[in-house]
Amino acid sequence: MFILHLALIIIAAKLAGGLSVKLGQPSVLGEIIVGVLLGPSVFGLISASDTLSTFSTIGVILLMFIAGLETDLDEFKRSGKSSAFVGFGGIIVPLFLGYFTGIMMDLSNMQSWFLGVMLSATSVSISVQTLKEMNQLKTTEGSVILGAAVLDDVVVMLILAILMSFAGSGEVSLTTLVIKKVLFFVVAIFIAWKVVPWVMNKFTKLPVSEAVISSALIICFVYAFAAEYTGVANIIGAYIAGIAIGLTKFKHEVFEKVETLSYSIFVPIFFAYIGISAEFTGILDHLGLIILLSFLAILTKFVGAGAGAKLSRFGWKSSMGIGSAMVSRGEVALIVASMGLASNLITQDLFATIIVVVIVTTVVTPPMMKWSFKSNKEIKLNSKVVNQ
Image 1: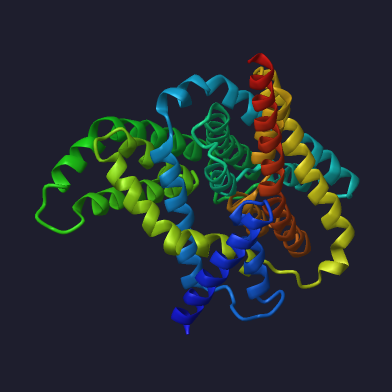
Image 2: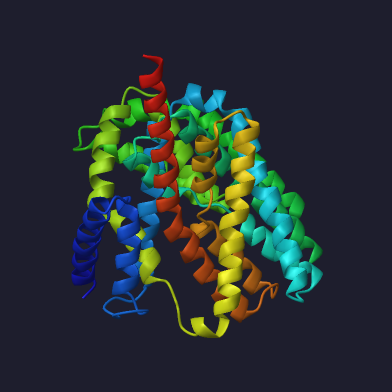
């Protein structure tokens, strides 16, 4: 039955993605929506499962690995200051507005801060796919978005560790978590610089088929595991692995083969699974809260990250595009929410509400980006015509 489900997901995702493109939207929007239709919330043809979740995880890891392969490291370095402005702007605004919203909802002081942390999370996987479809991934804006997302993940998880240490969670040691994160980045960068090229050169000489792609995937998955183990999202590890291999002579071969593998199976499953795993049971009982938190989640990231881009001297449309790209909360917010639920920092009802809010932010991000970057492109074209 699982094999049939895979076939159904892939054909539905491709058809829905194609329809979405014809309607002027990124294909990822159609793939997510068709997942909702296939899942328990609508037709109930496919249910979330551990196996399907594993395929989905591989999909997002490979998606971010490809983003790393396509990253211009020089542009990434040049955009560091702008990424910092965008990243911190996208954390500060939702963090504090989320806290004050929690206070107005009669949540405790600790629960209110936790709500702010959840709203501060960012998942860039949806934005990466949208940027790729719009040929914006290798632009300055694309580099800023990726850099800001990495910074966002690290800072939010550190804030979460501080919050949970104050809450008395014995499972979290702030000092240990910080050391593990710092150690990961130091070791990951050193290995990317000195070890990855050597491993690729040695492993690819083995007299076996597809040695290049196999060695690249091994490095990708090891980096993803190491990142997750040290408290950094696995997608960040995969992204760093992509950058590392992108600096070797194997970049183009790895990119072509991984892209074929990813977009034929794993990536469509990842986007569809977002919809399949959505749970809308009892949504009407909390509709007012869902609308409030969805509006807050969209507005705070859009304004905070967009303001950071504007302070970095981006134009209004580029700033809006960057702000839009940071709106999606995705799997990062779900991880944060799950940790809060396990630590009794949020109730089951609030957790269910957050799940729906995450889906809403994920669905609105591609159209927002499409509109912002399309308008920005039109402005640039018009400016060129005037100048000529």
